[in-house]
Length: 414
Image (cartoon, rainbow, N blue to C red):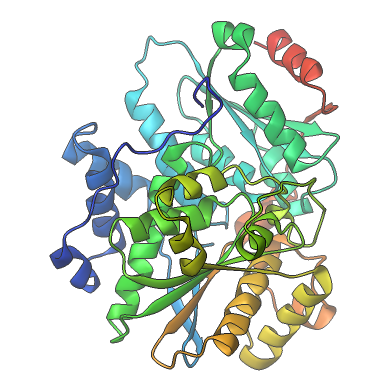
């Protein structure tokens, strides 16, 4: 994070050539990822090394599954931590390891999580030499499985339970990055989506989803994205800037609706986050919004026409989960259900018979067992690696939300 408390962005957004875009259906996911990353990173990583990083990091699929006519789900939960964050965390950890020399000062990765980021980062960095990860999570506001993914790793991963909200965790991480004493004693970096190395690999699955639709003869697509810290949809808009021909984006939020309100009123007013069933989206002041604003700094009206915001409360989320299951025999996590509902509402208001609607499924439903009615919960297939988590011991440190307490913890546990 820069010392001016801003966020890094590419100086120039490269335009991918039409030949590549029009023939995306001829490429695999790793091939697409290499081409996109190469255009963004230039010669900073040698081609063979970049390919090796990508083939190691992106070793799982992200299938587009048809639910009904003109409605598809992009499943992003097939990685190790069962969440879309695996794309960013695994790519980022390998890039950091690539640049980290053996005799350099240890890299301390600070990350705030509202649920899924922490688990993905923990597995992405577990055992990476000369790195240490400190994960901050809000007490009582992550699911049991998410907490197990955060607190049972050991080795170079440690978990800190903050008596506050995700916004409090994020504020502590941001303040640490600008604290002179901490920066003198530690080599700090972030694994949150405030780190540009998280956003770059998230563009890959937008291009790949479009490629899968092209194979079915579909070339017009609308993406509905569950949105919390706005890194996911930010990556989609970055892909659009690079030339991916997306017709429209839908920012689907829970009651933490800072951005939908902005898109309606033109007034951006952050507010304290509220706990919901879709906990990974409980963000009242999304960090990545400044990146999206930067992408459209020369044409804010274009942003308002390209992106529509919707918000839903917990009752509406549960109704969406039940409807999806009853009508499609498909179990969606609460974040995914919100994206589905937003897509259906947008399609009703803006019927386009030749547009394919794709809603992003960001996490495996087994992470949220207490959310579902019994009739739906019984249909969730729990992966063996999740069952194994319950046998491990949890270990975390409890802290308040004051920065001095967090700083003291870091300094006393060098």
